[in-house]
Length: 139
Image (cartoon, rainbow, N blue to C red; front, side):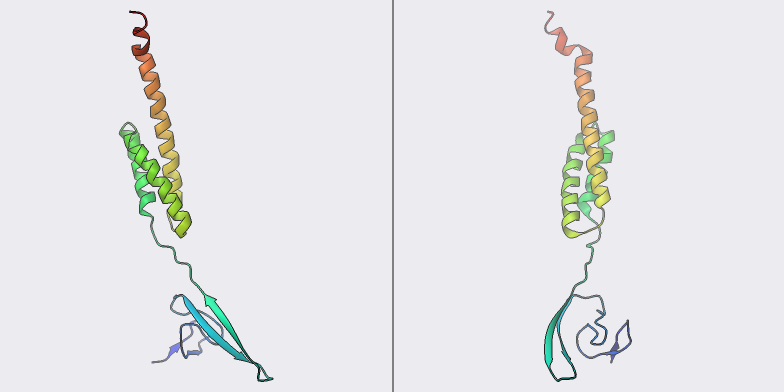
C-alpha cells in the first residue's frame, strides 16, 4: 500500500517526511537524513530535524487551583490557600509544557490572593471590632 504526501501528492518511499517538499506526514516527530545530488555529481548529506509541538491538553492543577479558589469565597477562605498553591504549580507546569489552561492558573492565583487578603482583613477587623483586644487592658 503506497502512501502519498498530503502537501504535494508524491509517493512516500520511506519515513514520514516527503522527499520532494519536506512536509511531515502523520504528525509525528521525525529525524531523517536527506541526500541531495546536484549536476556535478557531488553528494551532500544534510540532517533535517522536524519536530511538532503538541500541547499536552488540559492542566489538572490549574483547574483544581481555580476551583479551590472559587470555593474559598464560600468557605471562609480555607481552600484558597490550597487554591493558591495548586494555581502556582499549574502555572509553572503550563509554562514548562506549553499546555492549555494558563489563564485558569493566573485567574486562580488572583482570586486566591484576593480571597486570602479579604478574609485576613475581615479577621483583623473582626477581632478589633469585638473589643476582645481592648477589653483585657481595661479590667
